[in-house]
Length: 274
Length: 365
Image 1: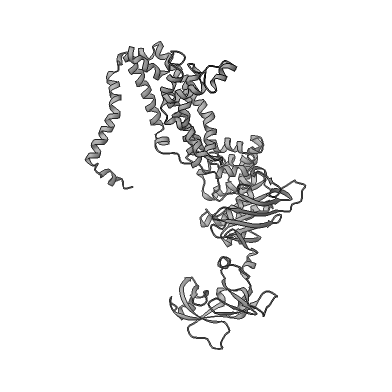
Image 2 (image 1 turned 90 degrees about the vertical axis):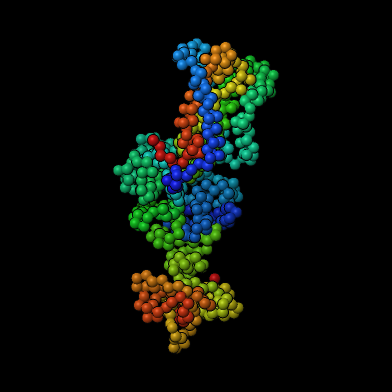
C-alpha cells in the first residue's frame, strides 16, 4: 500500500508497448467513428423518423426485457444462492449459458423452442394463436434470453456475500420467509439489484444476433437500434455511424456509472445508504 | 408480561446436532423467570445450541418445549418455524437491520406480526426510552456506539413480546467500561421481564452478575451445571476449574487419598458420602491456589501434602502473586507478593508445595 513506491515503479518496456497497442485497439474504432461522423447532420439523423422509430422500439423492448429479467431473475438468483436443492451448479451453468453462447445460436435455439413449429411454439400457435417469431414480443424474449444472466449472476453473488444473520434475526422476530425477503433481503441487495438491472438493460439494448435471427428486422416492429445500424450501413453510412456512436455513448455511460459496483468486484454488505 | 393461560413451566430442551467438526448433544432446563448462563470455551457449541433452540439449525434433532408448548419434537415430527417460536434472540454480532433506523429495527417484530405502523412505532419508541435511546430514534444502527447497538438489539428482541430470551455473547463486543454498564442494565431488564433466559458467555463474571445458575458446555456436551459456588467447590473439568480459578487434579481416588497418574498422592477431605476403601476409582481433587503454600526447604512437622515441584512461571499482580508449579503435580499457588520476594522464586527453582488436607476437596470424577 505504499503509494509513492507504486507510483515510482517504472513499467517494463515490452509491457508498455503491448498495453499501448491494446488501448489503441479499443480506442481507434471509437476515434474512427468520431472522425467519420457527419457531425453537421447529427441532430437531423437522430430525429429522423427511422432513427426515432428504432430508438423508441429499442427503449420499449429493452425496458420490458429488463422488467422480465428482474421479475424472474431475482427469484432464480435466490434459488441459486440460498436453496439447498441438488444440482445447483449445472443449473447455474444452464441459466447463464446465454452469456457465452453466440447470439445467433441463441436465436436459432429460441426458434426451435418457440417458433411456429417449435417445441412449445406450435402449441402456442395452435391453441392460442400466439406467434412469437418476427414480433415485438419475440424481440423482448430474445433480449431477455441474453440479458437476464447478467442480472442473475450479479444478484446471486450479492446474495451469497450477504450475511444471513439479519434474515435469521428477522425470523426470530416473527417475520415469515416472504416478509423477511421483502423487508430484509431485498434492501440488503438493492445496490446489486440496481447494478444487475442496468447491466441487463445495457445488454438488451445492444442485442443483435438473437434478435435478427428470431425476430427479423422489420422497421417499427422488430428493427431495434443495433439492427437499424446494420441496415443503414449499406444505404446511409452516416446514419449508421451516428446511431453506432449513440449506442457506444449509452454503453460507456453504463460502464462508468457502475464502475464501483461491477468492475470493482462487488459490494460491501452494509454499504452506507445515501 | 404474558397473558397465556397455559402454565409457565419455562424452557426445556434436549437437542443434538451433528456438524462434522462438532457433535452437540445437550439437555437443558430453564425454569420460569430463571436466568441460566451457558459457559464454555470457543467452539464448544454454545451458539449452535442457541440456533437450534431458535429453530435456525435445520440439522438439529430432539425436543424443545416452552411453557408446555412443544416447539420441536423430531419423534412426532413437530417443528415450529422460528417466526412462531416467540423466542427473543440477541445474536452474537447483533444482526441489526442496517438499512432501517433504530425505531424501525425495534418495531420490526411488531410490524412483521401485523401491528399497524403507528402502533408499532409507539411501542418501539417506548422500548427505546426504556433502554435510553429515545433521543436517537431516527439514527441508523451504523451511527451508534457498540453499547448503543447492544441496547437496540435487546430492545428489538423484547419489543416482539417473546416468551423466553436467548442472548448469545451479549457483552462480548463491548469495551470494558461499556461492558460494566450494559451488564448492569441487562441484569435489570432480565429481572424486569421475568422471562426464562439463556445467556451465552465465556466470562464467569458475566455469569455471576446475570445468571442464577450456570451450565458449562465443552465439545458439544454439558459437563457441569449448578451455581458458580457449586462449580468452585467441585469443578468437574480443567476448563471449569480454570474458570473459577481453582486447581484441579485428576487421579484415582481411594478413601481420602487421590493418586495422580504420575504417582503423587493428594490427601484431602471427601465431600461425598460414599467414602470407599475398596478399589481405587477415578476421582478429582480441588484446591484453591490460596491454600497452596510454597517452601524453599522441606517444611518441618511432615505435613501430609508435601510435593516436590518446580517453578514454571511467576506472575505478580499488586499484592498477590500467582506461581505456576510443575512436576509430578501441576498446581497454581497464590501467595502474597511479599512472600514471593522473601522466597525469591525464579522459573526453574525446585520448591516444596504444601496444602492442608482440610483445604483439599476430594470427590469422584
